[in-house]
Image (cartoon, rainbow, N blue to C red):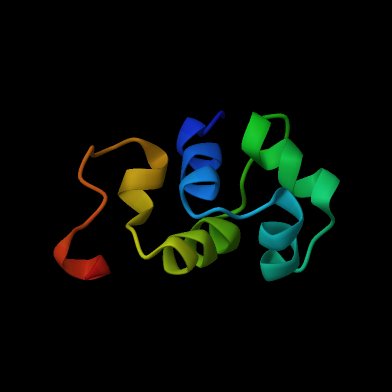
Length: 73
């Protein structure tokens, strides 16, 4: 599954793929493949990325257009 918002969130936060990969403790190429939808994003990584970007998992998944929910504030 392709998550366009992963790339958008990363760019908006002025982070590189390497910085995000380091946060997830994975190789940059693995993260790039998550971002491009080549690899399926594991649940643990989805949760960590929501915490990293201070947003909800629903926003990353495209289930809402509101990046700020009560849970993520």
